[in-house]
Image 1 (cartoon, one colour):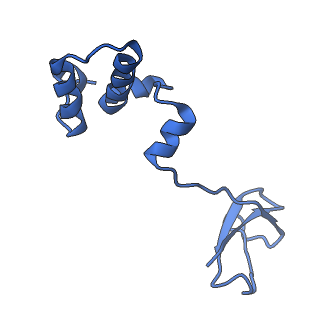
Image 2: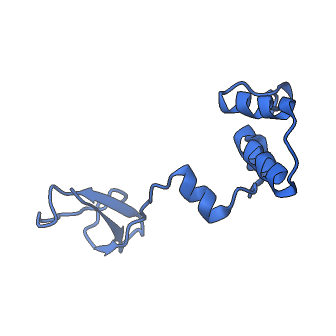
Length: 112
């Protein structure tokens, strides 16, 4: 069941039209001005990506300022850094990361 988008030649607004099948006739009318001078345009689309896909594509380094507020992202970064330097992670840090993954955030993060 496709959804087609049309741009109005009179007012320039986009109108989405839902059809039952690809072969169904489309009688589109602009929702903005009621005009019939419409041109079909390419629609935007989204692609579902898993967390693993995102980490593979962007790395596990925080990319945006908001990433530093996500304890799970910080935990992944900390684990990786300890591994890179060949240092054993302190038990207290391990407990905080595991707790954050379960939704129990440290007090310093709760306020953000």
